[in-house]
Length: 343
Image (tube, rainbow, N blue to C red):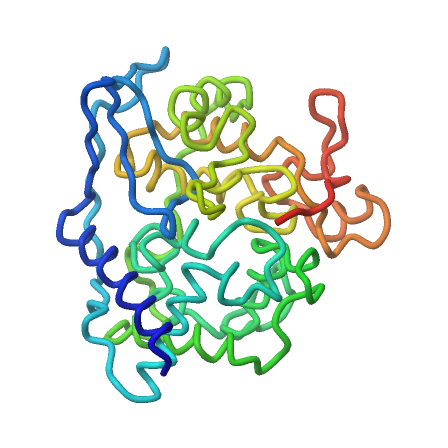
């Protein structure tokens, strides 16, 4: 194992363990009156908050976050073994937290796996990888087949990482060491998790959809107050002075494409409800989570790579019954035609 891999793994370990010990670390900056919650660029997730003071929305968010205990605690990164197994695990962590640098041939946008699977895939209610490992193989409606973990990762590259826009033009080939290293990491994280059994904290939350439905216009208000300071009013995120993404883009050329799970309003709402604003998970109401998810997912993004004919034909083939804006006309435009990808 090279010193580069070990140094990267140790840096990630220090960042994760610091946040676990602090239970939502906060960097508080006074003087300008700004309260800014940060978790580090490698772990920046789909919506963070930076506001001068906590603000009440017209429809009254919860006063404080609800703390939901996890059913499982993965091992600390300090417990990663030495030898070939440990080297593979550490490479998997580096790929997971920074695929743009460590799997660049197969990444076609500005996202990282850890943008949605928070704390390097460790956090409950953020689709943690310890729970995912124990759930596969399983039948998936999306693929209409039994999917293995490698199949699942392949799909994440294809859709969430927009691999069609990558230098290679697609996800890693079958049997790639990228899959081996990621799976080594997931397998190690899941030590002690029962196989094939429901486990609390897997997947995302399921916020209740009220009779009011979901509304991008209401969501725009939530976004402006809770998300725009970090992700920008244009949803394109923030890059550091070194060019690295700090806060990820939520729509447009550098975000996930229409085939990604997060392009479904219900999936995005569940993620937002449990995890956002960052450090204040479960502080939004169910209604706010649905509305801001609708606002984000009613924007154009790279096209679904499964589309070979018209948007309407692809919507019927692959989006039937999905809670999505794909194939719908919204604000005078047909959504799903896509935008050219960028990195």
